Amino acid sequence: MNVRRRRISGITVTAATALGLGTLSACSSDSSAAGNTDKFDVVASFYPMEYLAEQIGGDHVNVTTLTEPGQEPHDLELSAKQTAQMGEADAVLYLKSLQPAVDEAIAQSDVKTKIDAATLTKLEDHGNVEHDHGGEEHADEHAEEEHSEGGEHALDPHVWLDPVKYAEIAQGVAESFEKADPDHADDYRKNAEALAKKLAGLDTAYKEGLAKTDSKVFFTNHAAFGYLAERYGLTQEAINGLDPESEPSPARIKELQEEAKADGVTTVFYETLVSDKTAKTLAKDAGLKTDVLDPLEGITGKSKGEDYVGVMESNLKALETALGAK
Image 1 (tube, rainbow, N blue to C red):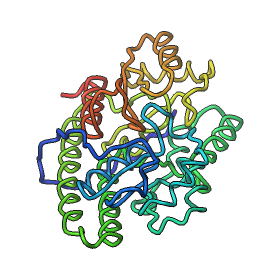
Image 2 (tube, one colour):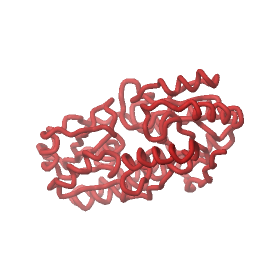
Image 3 (spheres, rainbow, N blue to C red):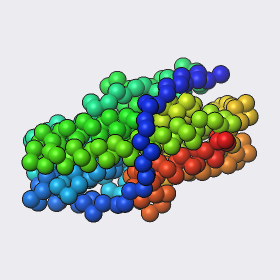
Image 4 (cartoon, rainbow, N blue to C red):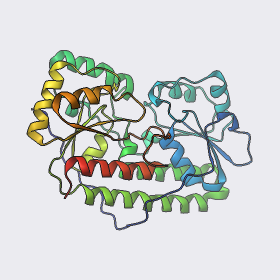
């Protein structure tokens, strides 16, 4: 029997704001623009950091991203040009342990303002809860996988999928912007407050939408949704742990088939940036449906939403359907 995740209630929020948010024109994936404008130049490591920089910076920032749309961020390798131009920026915003190549480049960079999102909220280790199966050999393999992505302390980096933790990060980013570019501090503060309301509204929607469901268990291709599951009292069961491309073992398939029956699981979720092969293999063998649950590591034409909030709303609808929300 798999260990069940303990439930942690979301923070109490009263803001019920409109969640829609248009795409901002400041976005650029061409890192050559970094440092060459009269604005506050920010280099973001991948989409969730880019989104924060643009929302908080508004018209005062020029944001470039190191990870192109559609590129799997964990596998990012930087060009010599990108590494050199990072030093021309006014600030770099990243999530340490998610992209080793970025961590190394930033450590060697002369950028004055280095903002590590991992220091702005509390990261947790979700691996032992979600992968209590397969014996010692599997556990050892999983530990190696988790160490390679999660860093020295094997902490889960996917904090942006919890709107509350993402809001904590946003507040820290705003404070860093205010300190680094004091001439526009008031605007950064106001933009951060507006973003906080949007994220609070998103948190409210998730709490209300997932409060009463037929099942609390959902299957995913890779273990990206630990924080979201913990926030809203759900249990994530990942087919392949931290490696979305690997094949599940026959024993794991059988175990998930049995759990699907026991917990009323109807759907296996896959992602937009990686193959859906493993999810469809399990779904076919277990007689389940498939659907997309987007880990929001990048926005592409296949994304079910134009930005962070839009995709998170789509994810909520998918979860409500799969879990049988009342």
